[in-house]
Amino acid sequence: MFLWLNRPAGVSRRGDMVIAFFAEYLAYAIAAVFLLALAFAPALDNQPLTAFATVLAAALVSRFVVASGIRYFYQRPRPFLVHRVHNVLTEGSFSFPSGHSTFFFAFSSAVFFFERGLGEIFLISTVVLTTFRVIAGVHYPSDIAAGAAIGCLCGWLSFAYFMPFFHIIAGL
Image 1 (cartoon, rainbow, N blue to C red):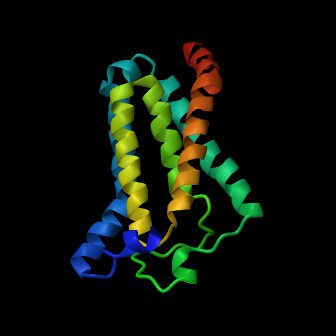
Image 2: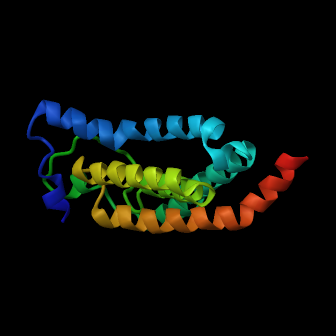
């Protein structure tokens, strides 16, 4: 599956630029839309500090605690280091689980629990972002799948356990 998804990489310079945009820079667009949503989305503007803290906690814990912990014990090399593939991006860390996947699936799923419609848009955007990271040659599909599972679990746990705490603090 990885080799099939990686086929568009390296075909043309313009195509590689599109792949790089979706694999790397779509993340900034997702973050910018979230910041705008804090001010304008109905479920988020009633409690913007709580939503911001909950979403940020989910994303940071999933990426920098859980994913980094797994990478400490399981050091899977990037696909472009193991296979002859076209890589559009290069990364220096290990690939399993995907840091982008854990971060943005946690982020998107936490948003989903606050506002379903916006969360669905973020989840779809995250699927696009992470699929393009496979196309770019920096992840295997299993890296993305593991990151998605970890991220969604962290998003739910953050909403279930951190959100009430943040809500109390924001109310003070």
